Length: 302
View 1 (cartoon, helix red, strand yellow):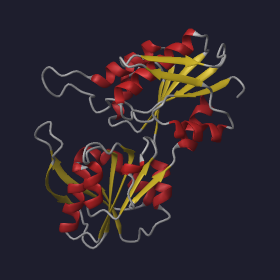
View 2 (tube, one colour):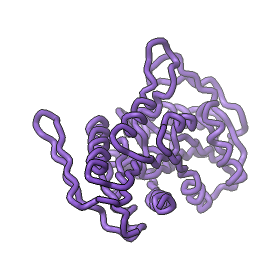
View 3 (tube, rainbow, N blue to C red):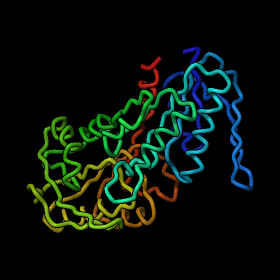
View 4 (tube, rainbow, N blue to C red):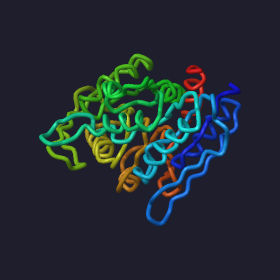
């Protein structure tokens, strides 16, 4: 472990410190300055020659500032002789832009993967990609972790005697199936359709028995909250006794917090793949740490 150095961008320093704690290391020193013209200066303040290094940076707001900081950190580490540079990106930027589903659009997630390699990253650690096939965008080794077991272990501490797992749309069923196996619970599916690029989905019905049960919505991320909140309302209107929701990535963009606070969701379970500032905290929110998972994966690569 002597040759391993962990660096953090400014997007989620608390997570980086927690990972270091699990590895028994100190967070390595670096400085980031942003000038009035939005240009950025990144300085590595330790000798990294011949060292294995990691940069922990997630896609938190301001997104493009943090992306550029990640690229500069990777480039600087390689320029000063690091043996390897692993980009640890729990929530990957532009991950939902993963296909050309309309004429004239770009596959931006692939572009970001290419930029990460160009900047000097020799490998990447990722978490619960929106589309698993996006792993193929990387030409460097890209290891995709899952927070599934962290979420499952938490659920096992709760009363699941009358619970049903619910997929908010048909596309998420493949991700829900492992939860049903690990928890030995039945599944239901909401018929959701999106007709345009707005953040407002159209819900048409529920396949499965949810009446009188604890309905647990499972998704990979909650962005604007439109899908999860309208799904919760539909479940309650169709007879669900209560609604819980869980996801890996608490993006909570736009009016998500207001929606989630007023939605009929009793318990909201997420990980800390993204920082959740005080203004986005709420009483129903339970945040689980992914630091042990990241630390174990980093150690396994050495």
